[in-house]
Image (cartoon, rainbow, N blue to C red; front, side):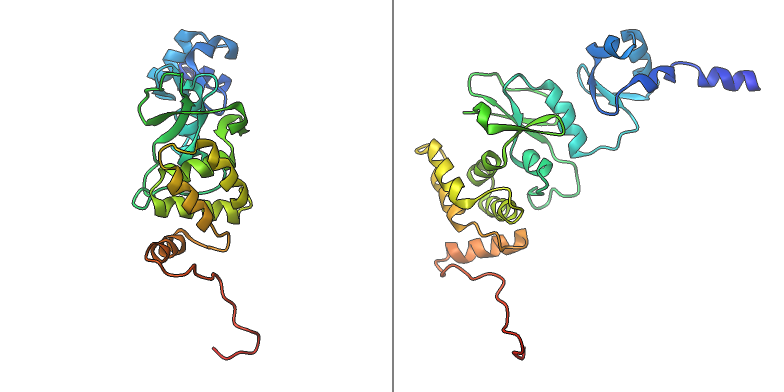
Length: 239
């Protein structure tokens, strides 16, 4: 009986302790002290998963956007970055469109214009003008900077989502609307820049929710004056 238990605790899961806590390239198995055969054995045993070809991670890791982003980052070419809603999430801003909050969304990434798009399941890849100054690092992952993320969302997200993201990022102190208005002129004449410019001009860090941002957008689109947010009654005034 004791001998049987010893056999059960033997391979193929013996090498699991050599695996890092996050995803890694299968081709890096030797760096971890594993043979490719051992890694494949762990995959067959179900203790490793391969969400993308050539990229594996422990099967006991819970599915999350952070995990999917880390997986996708390993597939990105040099000079590429996680962007838009994924970048916002990693910056602490949840700007997933309405109706998508009950599932883990696709990962969004951007590659320089001259680079081929990354075709992987669960990844939406965009080509765009992308400079080194547009990229920062979060938890070891290449991510568009807060300012670049905000401009991209203002251009490409649905207007209500875009304004909500701008308001939330400004409220968190990640971006300055005045600086964004200067930055967006870098793409003057390109698609959706006029819309982005308008949304940035309406950005207000006093907005406290995406619903409030969407309502404000409807009022502004209808031609009403710009609403004053978070009005406080004078102390001692009856409500």
